[in-house]
Image 1 (cartoon, one colour):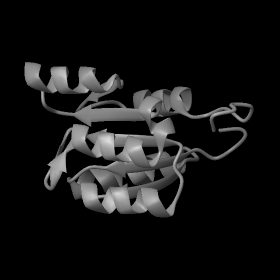
Image 2: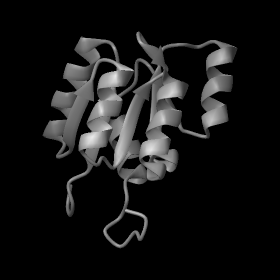
Image 3: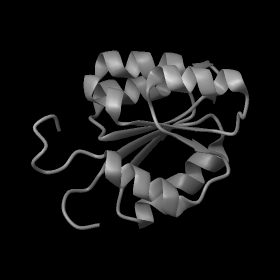
Length: 130
């Protein structure tokens, strides 16, 4: 990827998913951090800026929409730079994610689709809100 390296935080309670996405996105040129709990992810957000948040809807210690609201309070720009990933196909899951006004990728997904979405969501070099 040309230009600035996109900083991504992945919050997902499945260690294998965090590891696989970290490897794939790092190879694609992203600067990746991962957290297995909402608390750990929110602590990382307080320590380090991120450009895009990748968030599972179901995390053991709190729901993804709660993590999203807390992350958005800490870093308001994440309101439009959060991507939900979930295997939950329920109507309730769709309603929760729709209420957050965030895009969604259903598990399983193609890494190339994730990369495309992250690039489109990341701030541009001339983006005043970056």
